[in-house]
Structures are given as structure tokens and as C-alpha cells.
Image (cartoon, rainbow, N blue to C red; front, top):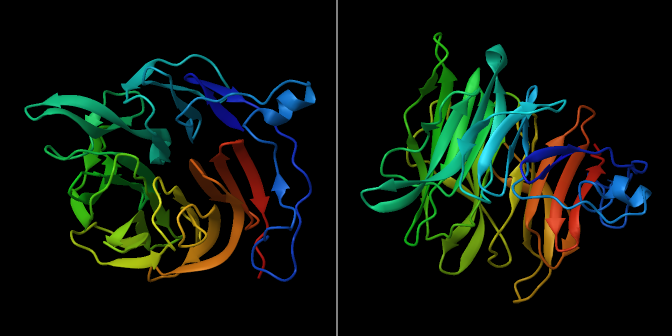
Length: 341
């Protein structure tokens, strides 16, 4: 495992218990022991030595191909070799905001991050992209801000999605990204997939992509004055404006509402945090499920309940099991969950 310590990638190898496979459900349910590491990325190593769990910095590092990208407390992002070593600064991001990085064909890497820029309208947070260690180029269009950005491999290139949460509305954008024969970034047209209700800067989302398609942008947001849930917005091979959303409603609203989804595998698995009941102050739960070809969410189980969650991530293993990571007030945990028939 790799975690961020003020811009430096820290490598640890936590101890994991045996994987329990429940016979009666599709995913390991609460009460069935998952394969779990101790809290915090370095807790297993530190605990073995009698120390405290390791402390990590936000945001999480991102791994792409042979490189790892980490942001320090000042917002500087470095690309260093996966096996360790020094790396030059390749981006100046907004402190504490998430980054995304993926491999591209030809041995390239693509990084996306948020950064503040001065414009005629004042300071605006925008999305930027970096190919390898070249200079950053704007990913969001002129006049558009960005409060969240995510990347995924897509059709021999990349798909970028960014959210511009504003006080009046929340546009969700998508565009394709490629590399020219000359080794430069090539940006496809910017599509405004969806416009949601008013949001806030902590609003996040996820890119959900099957093995052969389709792709969806997932946005936890208000559907109207009385309903809140997850909007699944389809992304065509060439992203288009004004796509319809398929809603899966939560019992109540939540902010922030962490969400994550798998990429490049089918079915698409989703890990999302939602309230367990409509009543104010109800516990929150990390819910696991999947998307069908139309973007409809099919719940499988409530994996973990807690007072609050700050972050969630999910990956599908080669054997079909799921790895989930989540952060609560007690620390960051990682689990492996078995997926049944």
C-alpha cells in the first residue's frame, strides 16, 4: 500500500486476515469477517512494532503505470518512480484537493488536478492536465470553474470528468483526452453532460466504466427540494450535452457524500455513503452495489455503518473480489470483500 506523507509516497505492507466467503449473499455482509487491514495506511506495520498508527496527509497519492503522484501541504505535486526516489514538481494544485492520474498508451501518464487562477472575474478554481512531466494545460473550458476532477482510461485515450459546484447550479462536464503523434495533449470538445441543483465545494463524484462500455458520471446531489440521491449520467463515446440522469434516491441528504466506482470491469461496482434512515442524525452506511447497462443502481449490501465517512475507494481484483478503502473518524481502513454468484 502507498499513502501520502506531506507529498512523499510511503510504502507499507499491512497484514491481512483470511478472506471469508459467505454462502448466502452476493457480497460479504456485516457480521461476516472480511479480509481487513488495521486502521490507517501504516497501522499494521506500526502496530507490529508497538507504535501508533501512521499519520497520512490529504489528498491520497495516485498511481499510474510506473509512477506515483503525491501533493504536499503547499499544493505542489510531484511525479516519482513507483519504487521510490526523487521527482521534480509537475503541478501547483489547490491545497487539500484531490488528484487523479492514469496510464496512457505508449508509456505516457496523465495527471489531473485543481488549481486557483486569477481571471477578470477574480480567483477561479479550474481543472488542469499534465502529460508526463510537461507543462500543465487547462482541462476545464475558459469561463468554467471546477471543484472536482476525475480521469479514466477510455477508448485508447482518456476520459475526463469535472464538476463545477456553484451556489446556483452544478454543471457536470466530460471530454476525451488523447495524445498526438507529436506527443502533445489533444482535448476533445467539452460537453456539459448534466446540470444539477446548487452544490458546494465539497461535492464529489465518480467515473463508472464497464469493460466494453457504457460509461457513467455518478453525482450525489439534490434531485429537487425534497429528494437527494445518486444521479447516473450516461457518457457516449463522444460525450454529449444534456444527457438524462437515472436516479437512485437516498433516505435523506448528505454532505459530503463520498462515492466511488470501478473502471474497466463488468458489472460496474459502486461504493457509496448514504444515511441509513430518513431521520436527522441517523447513522451513515457504506453501501455496495452495481450498475446495470441503463445506469440503474442495484444494492447488494451495507458493508459498514458509522457516524461519518470522509472518503471511499473501490477496486475489483482479478479474481472478482472487491477491495474497498474508507476513512472515518477512527482512521482509514481497507477490506477485501468476496463476491458470490
